[in-house]
Length: 253
Image (cartoon, rainbow, N blue to C red; front, side, top):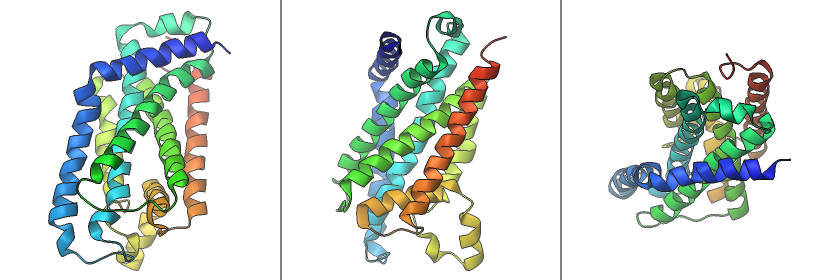
């Protein structure tokens, strides 16, 4: 394995984060903090507990997941789209680097940014609401697994996109609404039976539910199901990336 090439791509991508610190880290942290102020501190104190948990604490895992999903896709898609847009992707493809090493470099850096962002938001939320973490290692595992999975998904979007508009359309038009409707702000058990069944087709439900279980030990679906659905989605993304490099789809023309 060409570790020098992986390290070069990884360092280059991480360096871009530090150059755009306000956009990459500060902006999503401030946006999520506003959610904590409005829904956690202001409105949350007037709402009933859910599963014995105060509303402000209940939404902490959902809000972290909302930022992590969005930023994972954005970081990974932008990372691979930029060399495509600038034309430097051909230098990477012609270098003695395998597709596997390219993916590790770009996706590894994007996932690292997402995990760092998730942990910063987690620490920031302590300023606004009190919460506990019953299973801290599971929490870190879910955070890392979710970041990695959606960075793989973002990598596919970055290869697929042939313009800046397409780069933003999936996170804004699809992922964010699915996250809002995936139990970030409520338990799906509060919905009418018909909509509970419909919601189960939303993959974000399993991510939010599993992540919330690691905090409080309660979940809308079984922890095994949440973990299994996340792994299935990751395998689908890996299959998609394998097909992209095998066919050269939108990489070689």
